[in-house]
Image: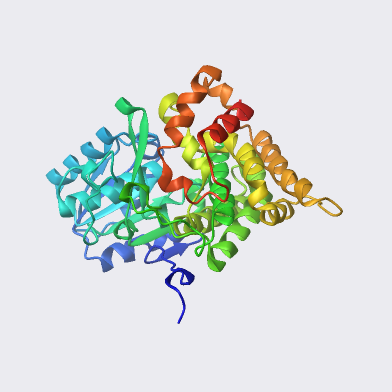
Length: 410
């Protein structure tokens, strides 16, 4: 009989519709859900661009709708609470999130809280929240991404900013998977170069960390509930998804940034984002994300830019525990590693990430965000509080290690 830890599990959103023109099939999906009252969750930019109108136009003729367009980047708990209050007044039977990961996250959690009640922080893990379990799915939710990076459309996770505490927290539950993800690359064409670059590097970070996190049969299982990992570790299925995502991003991100109308590049980036999102929501992420949360919480930096500036040095730190995997990443990113030692192959992967990041205009150090030597010790201490992510990192991480990564990332 096999030991329990040799069994791996895989999960994802109920359904995905992918491809140019996928948005045209939304009307039939809403009809199948017998939608009579749809709440559209988005941000002002997406609403002003008219993308949300495509969702509204797809509603059944007799369906009511209301638009909550107050989502902000890295939404605070106040934004989530406002969305829940909006839902309580409108009482939707379907929620459609349209936009980047922030809008999709707010849509998912709004559906949960509207259905099951309570406060947002009730569902956040201790010590910040109560860790209340989500018993069942919430209001049926459809995710329509307009960026290619967060993977929120196929993820059970939402990220919540707590400005007063300079902290980011999350809610993770299989009941937060959207009922349907409608991924239409044409909806990303209008995304400006900066957000295209940041979201693309976010997807690359997801893929690389999913590919190098601890495997499903070698991930610690702490007894303390607030230290238990969110994910099960990498497995053969997540490895394949991550490999393909790394390959696609390496070949297409520069093209998508430099020519937003390049629909082939946009399609490949949308596919890569989806694959990386599915990979990391099963395999987990590592030190890059753990360090990025306190940095972003303190300096209000875009998540994609934050992880992009930290990733190369995290890769160099992790290399001794994953030489072969980082060497493969270098090859997937188009590097010639023939004749190189395992150390050199791994370092070539970190160099490839830095080069791609630089080519698409991402700052090449966290000093650009305002981080200085005086902040490093506290940022490292805050990182060590996020053990639920750090336990998946391929190499054990101590506070002095994080301080070194931050210094080398300046």
